[in-house]
Length: 466
Image (cartoon, rainbow, N blue to C red; front, side, top):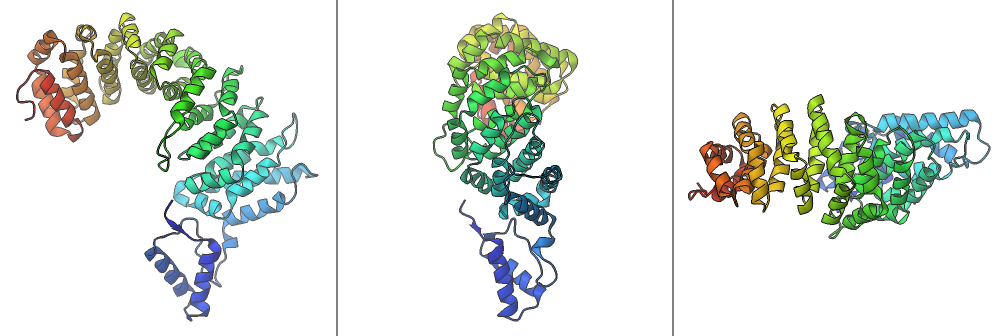
């Protein structure tokens, strides 16, 4: 936020002064302006660099698109616009989306520098959605363009300052019959809330949580993917300007309202559902404390996850396997849930999953994470983990993937928790040659050195620091 900025007008004036006052050639004037501003640390993103007399910013397709939209913005969309006008507005937003969707192009920065967020919000505010209305055709292209335009803290602030949250929530509230509009609208919620605590707060004050629950409960086979993205972003503390984020309170609000229950019910559709992965990630974002984790288990969340883990292994679905394991590791943070997982033969299912994906350290490290959490401060669970084959899993995986740093780290943590309060496990693990593997992992991977040291110490070895 401390980076210096410059407007397009000020930049153009600087180039013009170089030509008129200093007698520079147009191309030289442009180069000098760029060089001077860069030395001063000015952020030039979104600035169009045109050689005076040779080109104009109006030649840029993004600017041309915005200029045409500004003409329509001067007339209320609730007014007497012709069908062809509505078609053109829709086409302009589609074109703007296409021009700005690639980060490499820099067009989103150009558009936002020239007021695209304010303009799009203004046009959105003039869309009145009614059943069968021709104006409905503008909603999706407009919201899709807005989601692309909002790409950094400056654009999220522009969105907030022009009452964007209120406008978008209004459109969402009137779009329950249109999955495309809902998806496009929640994509804007996710984009605008990213990295901006105040925008998150604005959406919460507008009861976005109640809207999310209503959409989750509606009877539709169409998955609103952006809805799950919005949940995750709203519950992520990603604004570095804020010392204490409110998102943990929002997560508790989501759970109390019933969103955690709705997401858990969504998981029951199983591995065949196209919302399984998204719903699992969103539910993990809500499971921020012991009470919420236990409540998810009480309505069948652990049973559902263990079934999905089994099915993902049988069907070879690595993405589902990793996501379900990640959520299960969060739920396992509750002591009562650890016992539930063990009682439901979860350890056996996890070891079987790791065996099925023995060629993928990313799946294996998720399995190891859950087992390490289950064994924490529980010698009985640690004994059951060894019986299920967790020791063999550690030996085989550490041998096979010596430089998979995160997996090696998770393996060390799992070994530590299985060994620290269980002397019999220490004997078994050492007899299987685990010490050498830990030392090799420690030497090869800086990421796991601390965990490896702790594991060696808790195995009862005196020279654990070497």
